[in-house]
Amino acid sequence: MNVILFDAREIAAAIRLDAADRRALHIGSVLRAQPGDEVRVGIIGGRLGHATVKHVGTDVSLEDVVLDADPPPPLPVTLLLALPRPKVLNRVIASVTSLGVKRIHILNSWRVEKSYWKSPKLEPSNLRAQCLAGLEQAGDTILPEIVLHRFFRELVEREVDAIAGDSLRLVAHPRDAGECPRGVAGPVTLAIGPEGGFIDAEIESLRAKKFSAVRIGPRVLRVETAVAALVGRIA
Image (cartoon, rainbow, N blue to C red; front, side):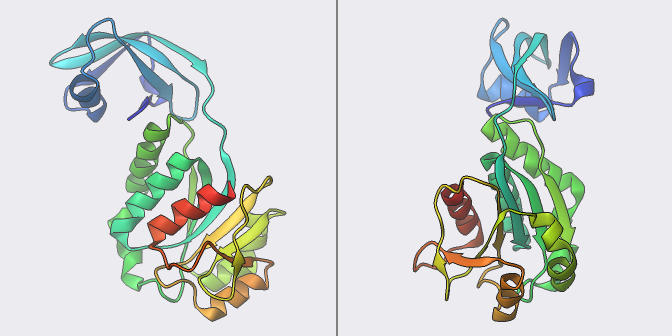
């Protein structure tokens, strides 16, 4: 982790972490910090800064917390993501969070297995943990908003206009699609389907809502690869 994050209620003149806390393990075992060393810290939802290591042993304590920097700016990208396989979901959430995406809508589609919606990976506690992992990697503090949509048709017909607003609307599609734009200056709403992509009827529903089908080349990519490649390209 490139920043050690704390809830606002944990920040005080001195911070004590139990030895089993993963943040304490990181300070002691990964950073190998010694008393007097500085470590980078931040408040979840707030500012970044640094603290001085006071003690490393049966517990870890920090002091002299200074929060004097703003987190990096968010990407102006809203992600509409068809629910991937549960073991892939964790990686995707952590990855897009580290890229700076702050609005993530997880949706159903015809190719999404119904059993995926019963996965404990969708529990708020797990999603938060993956978001924190992404923030820690990127040196960020602002958690993304994650919304679940169980019904594709309801999302497209009733909600997507409010979600996308006046942003550029793109949907990744391996066939009958134009080249994905690079370095888009304004806000973008990007829809990415499951393995195999959205079916034709879903693509047409999104096109009816002013989404343009785009691709990044002749190769069919795994979801986690496609997400990182597309977000990196348009942002």
